[in-house]
Length: 432
Image 1 (tube, rainbow, N blue to C red):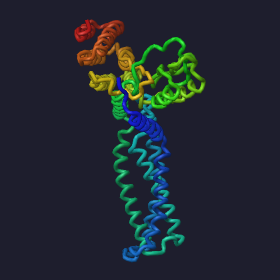
Image 2 (spheres, rainbow, N blue to C red):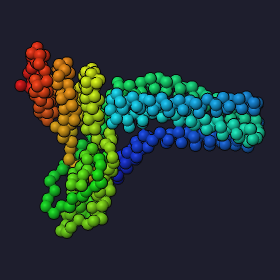
Image 3 (tube, rainbow, N blue to C red):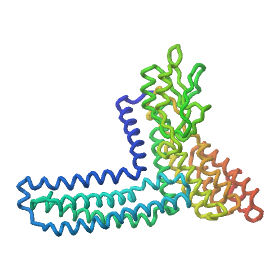
Image 4 (cartoon, rainbow, N blue to C red):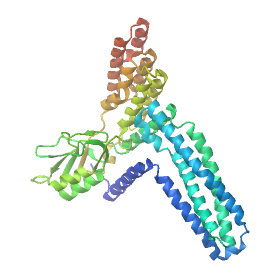
């Protein structure tokens, strides 16, 4: 088994770490507005530089009153628009949390269209206020600077109109249940594709740590990210072998190690090596989607379970989510017989693969339990499992048959109508 070049592996994992940081910044509403505000202020003051060039004398003359009127209109309306945008976004987030599941909230708050709209409205307000103050205090005295300021203001107006139209179209869907399901499916699919590219996060196959290995523990919380490049670097420097015991999504407790570390040479693993190993694990209060395909499946299952609750009674949503699971598992299976040698980037770090049984439990247990008394939900679930049983993966087939049998048992305990049970047993013949 040959490992890829160190330069390539380091470059890939550096991009992976940067992607993880950028994704978390995208969930902060203040980041994009701050960037747009800085750019707006910069544009206001750079417009004055045109007066220093010969080009400024050739530009058309624009009256100060016309620029001032435009800026006053913008300043008076944009703050109201920004406030309206925030109120609409908060209402959409609350709707997504109540109608779907609170675990979908990070995906809603990272919505690009809404963040861009808020950024444009706040940035335009700052731009208009700063430009208006500068204009009324004689900062723009030349023909060139006034023309550039007028042109910038027209461009900002055009951007505001286009952004508002796109935002109105998006806010009508943001927070709706169908839109939330689509967002979660996209996040789960992205995590699945990412795990396909590195089934063991770039490491080798996991093995049982030998006697004398040192257990490394982390903080209490969920593993959000595992920096296998940092683990490899420490292992190479200290001649270690590291076995990752906690994949992203695992809840870390005081009695559960996140990794096992062993030396290639006689001796004990140092405290410094143990601390460096623990530092490669990002642990937080909640799970995230990026490195955790199971989390996307679990969130979709929660949406279906809530829809099947007596208070909601929406079996159609559970049926929709079941179809989503079929798409995601078929996508997972498309990796096929890929050669694992091509995915080894870090030969001193051993990482377990995701368990197909755990993934099926995350996806289908909730629907089978909460929809056991609903014949159409059980029938759709059994048909979905029948489809997954024939995709060609042995582990997927075994787990599809296992869940199909469990679904039938649950239905038999929940239903009392013989005709419904007869239909269910007929559909479940593939699992007999």
